[in-house]
Image: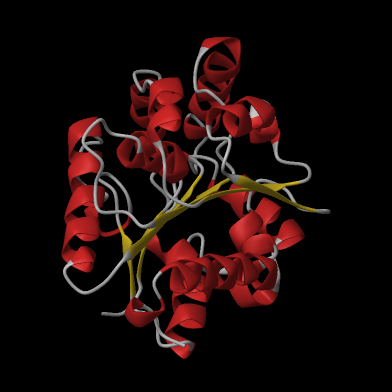
Length: 246
């Protein structure tokens, strides 16, 4: 059986944000799937519902687990959802976990401010597309720049999705995560605010901070993030060499 990877995207973007990572793993003989959460990407006409988001992750993980051990990888909102999923009381079939750009608890004044900002952007004539495109042009390399928006932007799902995240009991979920875990943050990521708390709640986790990088660490420094994937794959292989590719 061969190691499998399941990727869960962040808010507003889609499965296309993982193109560099999917291609990297394919070159190494590691199959992967990148899901679209409800109201995002190919499912942009759906409503965002938390239970359906978890069902999407669970279906992908359980399907992949029929072919080998699963490395779950989530970014931002997808990382928070994946934390809640990986840390269920009845553990899902996840062998390893990478949580990128998501070491902040979605609650309180910080969440309220972010929701206000997204509401203001969505109220613009282009729903903030021009601003989003300028930010990507200024921060992302050409090789990944088009990937974030290739599946469309779920501008109108943002407020509902953000509100839903406040219902997650992340401290409890974090305490229950027992598989090899990596927290990956950009040096200038605003969601590093609870980084040390997350590490205390998952004491076996490794923290990787990527210098000169913002929240979009997977696309801003794709080679560095791909190296983390290689680290995770090697770790899971060493734990059970008969079940992962060499």
